[in-house]
Length: 481
Image 1 (cartoon, rainbow, N blue to C red):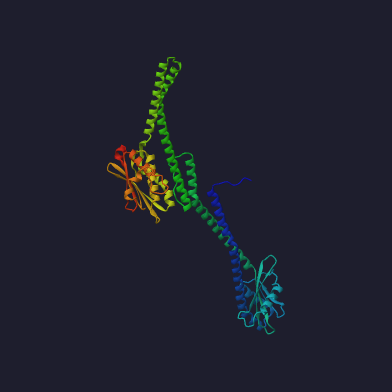
Image 2 (cartoon, rainbow, N blue to C red):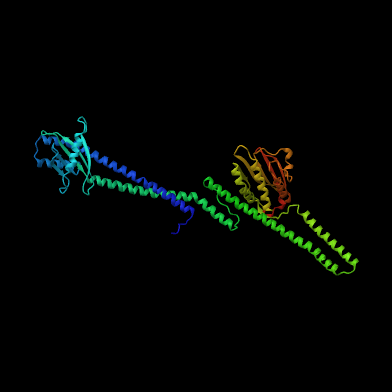
């Protein structure tokens, strides 16, 4: 047998719906039993009241010595008025005297039940206000019999008035069971549908995360999921967004590095090819040259070409210092948001509120990958030093001003001492334990490579405030329009 396969959402929805429906159906049994008990109590109460009322009617008839036929007629009238199935009188010895039945084909009430009822009646205290006894018996295929009896005074001795009911009791129970069954079936269906719908809604973010992960695995860019649902599922959404952003950042870095490698390889091929050709030629000539003087001159030329190659290598080593940027038209607001996606999981972990302030769009000519890395460094650094009494607060803002754009990141932490505000941008200088001292140095390189600046100052929030500026002379025409 093949196992059932389906999405987790479908399986959990079906399971939750089945559990809810089973719980409702399980409640059907005790409630129907309770309904049955109420019907029995109602029937017993009806028989008890009818017995007491009939006693007041029958005693005068017995005192008047009514003949048996007249007595049967009067009993049948009482039976019809009380809506019971059978009505009978027993003598003091327990023998049946007269009986009135609803259906002439029905036998009279079983004497054993009537005698049991009379015995139960005799066991009641003489001072009981309601001298009525009840017994229950069974008949062939009809159902339970409810029998009520009370004592009737006669000059020949106490007699027993017996009331029997069957049909109404069975019909009432059947109707009650049918109503309860229909009610619980409806409740079970509604509960199951509600639970299934609620479960599918609750787990819908998981399906979105799964689809987003599949798109990321295919190499699709710009994948994001809505962060919603319980904390665990929301955290999963944030993690997937951060993963997508990190993948894109790493892809951008790899592409940038490949561009640098391609550029360097082209320059090396161009600069080294000619000296290598000269060396190859001089070596071939020196190998066949017999004149020692001429051979010495060729060897000297070979040494000269080697020095040329060494100079090429040294020049590449010296030129590898300054950061090379690749300008393109980017939306700084989108760059800021993507940087925030990377920093958001760390902010959530440290219970820090990360807030963004930016215009709708701000398109400039810049290296979007490097700017984003710089903003990530500033945000993560601010989150680490944010307020020590959670929740901390970090604000990142973009502010166009005149011919430049300000990138501002500030926190409510302890701030940077005034005597360290310049030193923190130096490579390998760090004021925190375990720091490499390269994060803020890279930020400074990125801003200076774009022709901008960065500085640290005190924040109105009470912590550090980093203000970077990018000149709008690098911004395309669309920014100025």
